[in-house]
Length: 272
Length: 279
Image (cartoon, rainbow over all chains, first blue to last red; front, side):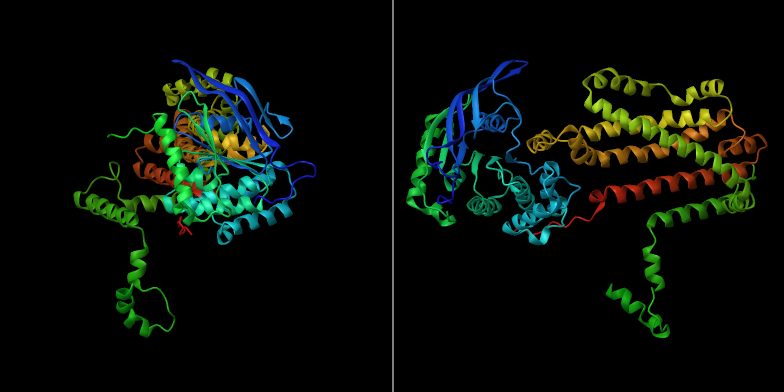
């Protein structure tokens, strides 16, 4: 995944795909203001897999919404590629914790909605949709309705839908949070395979430490409210990642390091 | 299965063509049908044993006789009632659904009109029926107006609920795809609302029949409501029952037609669910 072709003259390591600088977000509530995010500075390289890791209510999802342009920040600027984000950025693929499949469409039609809305050519889009579904082992479920599929299958369809238009940026908001542990493992592998085949930056929100380490190039640790970037940790594990890597000492060192950080933040409290 | 197979084996031997055994045919009929048949038998026997006079309670067999004998007139009168029901219902859909869209998309309409629609429901519309006759005369118009008044509410309310049912995530998703409001409506909101809208339509079919009959009671010289009134004034209880049977049949056909339309237009709600194995 690291040796992918880049546009000429753009060295991969230095170009920031997403540049978040001085971003704060305050929600006005009935019981006073809620400071969801405070002074976030973060650069994400093109093609990088970055996980935003933090406890519930640390503003992770808000940060994702800001990057997508669906919600605007109170202060600061976000640049994605050449564009400064001011309104909804349609140059992304989004996957939420809920699969948000359209119940009245089959798996294939659900993926195709992306092409229909964008008014892309439907023929090639259908080819790509089939190919994506094949890559997540859903080739036999193209014509199945969402209610006929399990949670894991539904979420895989929703990932295919997010990737149909080959977005340079994939935003995922706890996409596997509602799945059982084994389905989750499989979907992580599916996602990594899709990432290897599609050149894109992934902005991944999670509250699972092991998930963040397993998937990411870098893990951004957020502190509880108001959300701040507490630490950024490079995950120097080889790719392709294998499930057994989770047993490696190196993997466990990262786990320990991250757990210690959260203990320091008061997220975990252990009795002596 | 195997037991039935064995029981019918002897019958099968004599019959060269494989067909349903009587036992299986018996089992296929809905239990509800048996309940109805049982009730009719009790009614018939009860009326005969107690010698109840026909002007108090006619037996089902007498009602059936009257129904067949009076059938041509019932059919003619039905056309008026059916026309009132259908025209009223269609008008209600044509007014109600766009209004629901307006309430969903306009904050002003949501706050200025929607509460009025809801509170207007406290006015018993049957009480307005004589007023409608005073305003629109004895023709078809007041009946259609009453049908619209009765069916309008379930259609609007259920459509609004359905149109507002799109989750925040779904609307975010649409926007991230660059969908304009037109696309968001046709590709996301409207299909999402269809099951709720059909719930409203089905409720409205029931209300439409009530509305048409009540309106005919109040002032009419045609229709099944009129038949009931005239028969009642001459103590022809049997004929009244005949008209009631006719009204019930109309109501059932209308409701079943709506259920069929729902199956065709909203197939994803009724298709069998078989959860696949994850792999």
